[in-house]
Length: 90
Image (tube, rainbow, N blue to C red; front, side, top):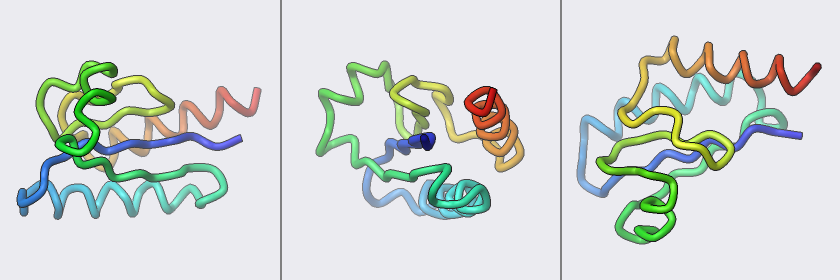
């Protein structure tokens, strides 16, 4: 089983784009078979974003749960993914 990371953002935010790419690299470090990454344009999937509680993009949901209401640091994301993978393995 793998973890699904969904990043909610809006088009045109250059800061968001750079930060998102560094976080995506963290997720890739775990392997695509363990962590799936999905970029979501909030404008295209507004109902889903609202359902999860996304109030302001960029935000990150993991396995359908809003975990970071703002983009985390690379270390924060790495620690959260490692914790979830460890729990999944037990």
